Image (cartoon, rainbow, N blue to C red):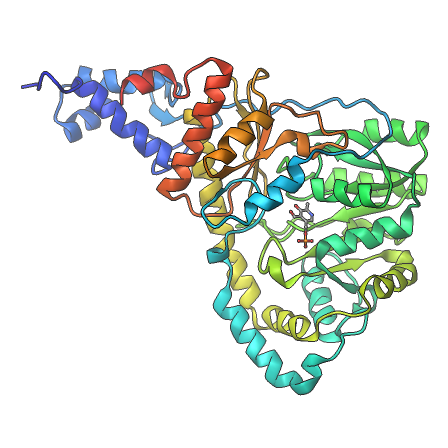
Length: 487
Ligand SMILES: Cc1ncc(COP(=O)(O)O)c(C=O)c1O
């Protein structure tokens, strides 16, 4: 007998399935039990079981395939639309939120969906401690001395050995160890540009590069960038013909914020195009090692025969952001970069450099990457499914090819900056889209979400809350109507 106060059985069944989908227990694309099987499991009639599945179908959470059954809706959301920024060189102005975001990241109670930082508990703390101890014993008192640029040879040799595995053949003499990727990028910009020069960048693009450009007094020209294929090379070619571009900056692998990995043909073409134009390519490959379960994507630098690519990366996104170790392979600008590196901060930290060399040599880094990559994949899937199920209608999202960032386009009437403020006052950080463009007011209804963390109930509740806040702005309900009814 049905209890009067209880919702009907079909709604209860739909609610349980909906929870499993939102938690990621039933992944996008997974097959649901057949009507007959579901009826048996739930001990209801077949029409009741079918009614539950149809409710979920009407909510867009599952799709019915003729003669096959019901499946969890995969990629229910359309992908974000490519932007068409005006081809205009402009000074980098940014918004205050860039600095506020950094301030918020420091709060321990925060649900940190904003910063592109891996959560500390996913980093290989024990292996790092072991490598530090062993490096300290090996180096003795010299661990306390300066590591003179270009940096320790054991580290540079390990970096070169690893890069050769995915097709980038460098000698240790072509590498300079830096203070994170940010210093590598700063040096690259410094040796290729002068104050007032124009740099072509992806649109949207990583705000750290914009901050560097602002501090160096550079102007930016935004190149239309497709969420799947990356920088639009035809548009870039037009820009190169019509503007005096001094350098091009790109994040072609696991792009921040769009998540694409540019196809190899595109990477080759980008290298050729810039080589022919005599314009240096500054490649940011900081997420390049995050290709879990697939062969690592080659960087553009692997196709650079003339030395025109300045390749910059670090271990900040994979292993130890606080160690601040990165490197640059500056091609034929090696001497200029080395000089600038010495001028920037004289020397590096030998203990950390030696410990990182040990992490690479022992295989600990690779072991960590495999586990970490799988965790990222699972989180990305769960968070994408949650957003697809609970954010307002009209939300667009594409799962990243690689890396851990989701770029989400909300309905056009949502103001992501006020969403950021409202979420911030409830202890949740998100990165509003306006941070990802030089003038600070494009991408007003976009947000970037960091998935490099466990999908705890607190995190999922925070995602739902953002969905509800966005829906309130959009004047729609956060949960798809029928699914909400089934709760
Ligand atoms: C694309 C990109 N490049 C560089 C960095 C910064 O790297 P690092 O911490 O090594 O300076 C980040 C950090 O968010 C990033 O997303």
